[in-house]
Image 1 (cartoon, one colour):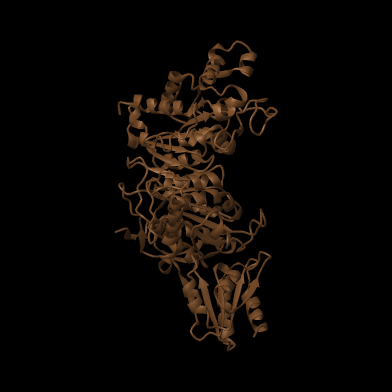
Image 2 (cartoon, rainbow over the protein chains, first blue to last red; image 1 turned 180 degrees about the horizontal axis):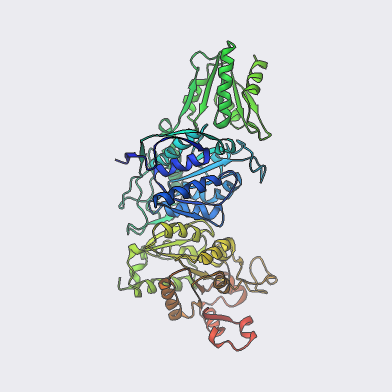
Length: 380
Length: 247
């Protein structure tokens, strides 16, 4: 079975951990043994922690690339040898990785990318948080595909999502992105490291074709070094990796597979955190750091007798459209706090026939519960 | 494997190369080198970029191959080599692929001196996209984007890679087949970063505009206009001839 229950390879217990360190620890516990990256604020602490874990354990290879392009490329090469590989960056570095992100998607390469968001566009404010990459991580590269993006709201979740991201990447043979931001990445909180965790190791089959056209699932993965003369290419290919760049039917099949293997498993991948939803008249829907303020705002609104509900996207992509419609369609208004010009707000406007009221922060400040409470009250 | 043809996927023939393209000679030179070194299929992995050169190993060499994004082959290969140090990792790219978009990866791979062999199939222009000028197009040469003569100077890529720290660097043309095979063998055997610049022919684009559309005449030009680094007599040889040999 690809699922395994393992003892934590680091000391279990309760520790004060920084967000960037927590995600590095989670990834290490999941079995990440190759890390390639390029220094960037506010993601650099991930590198420091990974190196520390590799040195302590005597396992793992760290590579500092000449840029982010080289870093993600090296991760893809490493992943095809069977090693779990990760890189971490922030918006400007993610921009550079996009070309090879597309390659990883098309070649179905398991990989984890941590994006510690900072304010943009361009160099922006390097050490200030933002949630401006919400759509970028989904639609970064050209062509059609689905991708998995996890959005933690705490240091504890950064640790847990470090593990889950690898489990999903290995399960569905897809790059998985952990979308966090400077505010959580640089936060220090108590984090509980359990005694044991569940991990998923990709299904390795030397005799399997390297690619699959199955619309329901990812295929098993042969590896470099198996001696089977693998053809791996970012051009449109057959299941055996032969380039076919003129046949629309081959391209159609492969794109349907890339989309289908994620969409058809959305109920396994998608995760939400809901509180006070059953009798809610209004809902505060959000993700990441903004949902933390949103939760506090919901509690204060409840104290005032307002029937507020809380909906948090722990997985922001793929969007489980059917489920979200069902859960949110009955309410009167949905308030969406986020630190951008309305990314999730726009997605929800498309999905549910409910008035959406964005509460937006464009100044690289974390939205406070007070701002949310005030905005909700103004609309009641 | 005793016969070099054992390394070649003939089921994908005919190749996608244009008539008279020198890349077939480079393919054969690589296959000969692997055969003479008695390497096994499972010990070797090829990584290539985009363009005509990328097709030399992928799909025509029968070994694991990763056909990557344009210019990034060395970065992918670094990830493979770091996680599987026992593999012989060979990168094949073109002059546009390795020296232009991939130039940064090339000099850093040489600086790190990681144990990768890199073969640059250099046809002095971008063949697959229509014969535009590349970093190795000589000044004055005509290409589809320099119709009145190229105004920029060419890189001496072999000298550049040597200066960046590579362990073994050689340059030969496809008109010097035995020397080319030998250089590839030496490159594979040398620990650290090895670089072989293989000057190829492109009768379809570069030859037609500058030398000859006739493959034989093109090869003959390469043979007659090359001078071994050991026999360089004057500055004129360096500027106007193709210097070949080991750097």
